[in-house]
View (tube, rainbow, N blue to C red):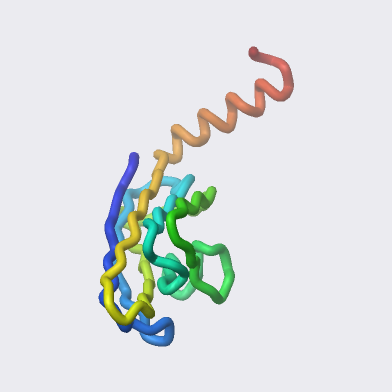
Length: 130
């Protein structure tokens, strides 16, 4: 399942006091997170994703993802035990003129689908199937 969110940040939002936006994901395994940072951000913005107090994107780094005209893809592999599982997106915008938006894409797989895929890959490596 693909869940999408748009997070927009007003000008003059400092990294010391970022906005906090809650996103809800269904139960399963968060297998991939993509963050589109459009052109124009020019390194003046930053974003990170947390579960509770744990930073999950970028993984366990006390920093924000910055960029401009780039898509960041992270193989997150995070178990979403609750339905819904709530993550917090923190973002800032040090531009003094323009609002900037981030586009977030979360791929959540049902646990049984992931198990089937892992079993298939395992059997293929053992050359028991083609």
